[in-house]
Length: 374
Image (cartoon, rainbow, N blue to C red):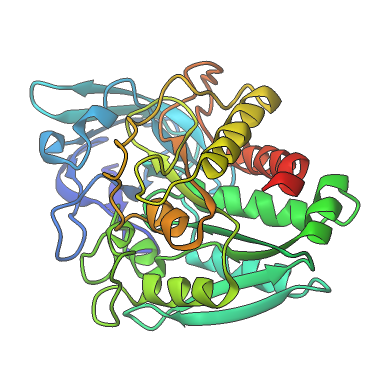
């Protein structure tokens, strides 16, 4: 039997060039109106026991070629549990070769465990039904999808958590699911403290159009939302505009923008060191949070990460810098790996939805410990 391959579903992305029995030559479709591409998500129909050989070509021109070496593709046969398939990258020709022996007639492959729009709406519905939670539609995407915001807590500190500006970074919404599960568990002592001290505004998915379309980095118009925060517009980036407008109304004391990094095999945060108005106190709070999180969980570290901007040289089109500058907030970008955590590798799953959700709990528990000083 010749295998069949499709990506005609929510967040699907693959181009099929050739199929020969249980082997296939594939490539990744670019984001609409953009040259970004790296995210893939497709389904293979096959026979149980088939030795699948799937070759994704053209990756030398992908958004982050450095993301492919030592990367293993995600694989699932039930769309609940995502493991890793043995993969190898030929840098000379730019081809990722995925090998997998099928244990089911249908097998899904993805760049990371997908977080579907159906699951997003289930999450919103479940959390919105919890007493004390308010769900608002801050605005709409270019294709008319709601930008959902969940508000909970009664405290004076204004905390904003938001994710998936870059839609292919699906680990960010798994993190959000973990955060919301914790904050709506009123038996959790850290959650109770946070809800007493803070009012949370949580946007689990800022780019629903890109998420549904199988984009890596951009919205329907091919715009990278995390370069729009200085001057968002109705025409190009209404997703950012409605969130920033809501922030202007509430103010911001603490903010976390949740992402994934293609190349760096670690969890880390990036700050706002180069903003013009930075204060010593603001920077001290950021460093204290970062160092305390590293003490709490071995899944977080401070050695690997991005270089810091020189004073006054921060890119204010990026959300963390804009929010820190605009509100004097303690703001940060949290990055999780597409690969695995170098310091705590998991050969079976690599970095996973489960670890993303657990990390959210550690991030919030750290905030609970420090909230009186922020």
